[in-house]
Amino acid sequence: MGYVRSLMIAYNRGRERFEQAASWSCKVISSCSRPRRLPRNPCCVLIGGCVALVGIAAGADSADTRTYREYRSKRLALTTPARPGEKAEREKPKVPPQAHLVIVSVPKQRISVYGAGGILTQGAVSTGMSGFPTPTGVFSVIQKNRYHRSNIYSGAPMPFMQRITWSGVAMHAGVLPGYPASHGCIRLTHNFASELWGMTRMGVRVIVAPEDVHAVEFAHPALPTPTLTPAPAPVANAEPAKSAVMTVSANDKPSAAGDAPPIKLLDPLERAKAARIQIVAEAPAKVKAAKEAVEASAARASEANKAIAALRDAEGAVAAAKAKLDAAIKTVEAAKTPEAIERAKSAQAAAEAKLEEATKVAAEAGALEAAKTQEAFAAARAAWDAEKASDAATAVIRAGERSTEPISVFVSKKAGRVYIRQAWTPIHEAPVAFKDPDLTLGTHVYVAVESTEDSKAMRWLSVSLAQPAAQSGRPRETAASVLERFELPPATKAFISDRLWAGASLIVSDQGISHETGKYTDFIVLSR
Image (tube, rainbow, N blue to C red; front, side):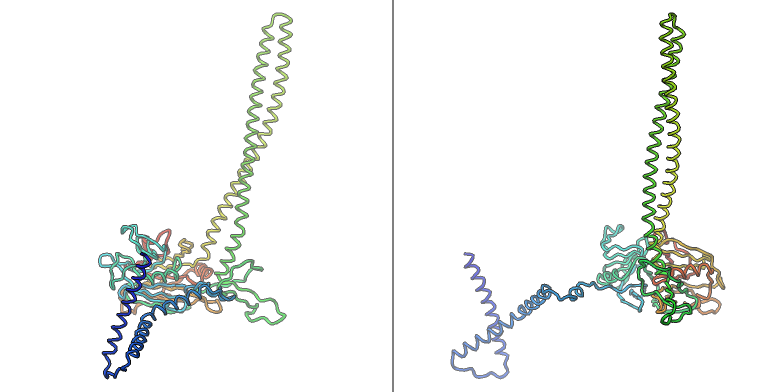
């Protein structure tokens, strides 16, 4: 029955297609403007109709045929073995461009991503609605979670979440109705959020602007420049940076054949990487030495404890011998007969010999205990020092890991100080002198995107946020004029130049450090 039923289904489906094709052919024939005389031979009519119906049916199946051919060609492309080199080319992942700056324009509901070459991509956003405004100012990415769920809004999914404050503001994929509709977060389309996720790193600078602002390439003599230093000879296992090593002769000219070998100059990033490699190489030895010192201290302590126990036993034996001697002396004194006196004196002599032997053993045990205790104390001090050295090495390793991260510099007119952080950790602070301290500065951000070809300077992007109205008829401050309003201490300038590479940022503002700035954040400067 199953066979008959399958035949009936096939027949019915074929009949439906045949009737559909026939109706198409009738429509085509009836739509002709000039009816043509049909041949009188019925066979010709039948053959022509069959040919037409077969052609129409074939046309109806052509889409399926094309789909199958496309599927087969794709499958063959996947199963066909690749030539040498072609497989590596096919499997090589595409590296997304690195973002150095992200700007979110609240009035335009737009996000712009900047790299070393300018704008990388732009997209629509949905920021905070009325009553839940998105804070504006200068932020950075402080957490990334691909599959984040809100701990405030009933576990709502927030894919590709990139947090900019610990109070709950983040960029993530969400619904974009075309106007501000979030509760403070910055919603992105799913595709854009996924794309942005691959472009950003932890700490990338994010600006949320209350107006439409743009980043522009900027140069100024007051901006810091990297310090180039001669490389130690040899620089072993140094990780290559972005071809930032320069080779110059003593007079800064290319050396001719036969001259002294050129001097290698390292930029700050290469120098930091080389130092980190050296630190990481030396740290295991210090940790191993600390472990061995602790083990030696434990062994010495065990020996000292055994010596102390032996001394206690010896002292106990001396006390027991003294007790026996005292008893023997009393026995001698109490003896009445010569035989009893003789036996008591013999026992007294044996007790005296036992006491002498126990005293000798106790003296030896005391000397051994003193020596072992002294050795144990010395080993304990050595273990303590080794553990301190190990802890210091661990701290240096952590500092070395941070040392290859870009620095952030914040110049605050309100505080009259400059603050520097690296990997969210404060590393420097100093006072700053301002010209015309009563006049406002605004908030200006400068981001280093890459070094110049000679590695002696950096290429910068600058962004100036909204500023208050000009005072006393003075024009508003610009990114260039602000840099001339303050002077950093020479030591601070040198400190920055020794740690300057792509990704570093400089913030100059009237504001102070925001309450949002904490242990696990970079500088956050709020403008609202």
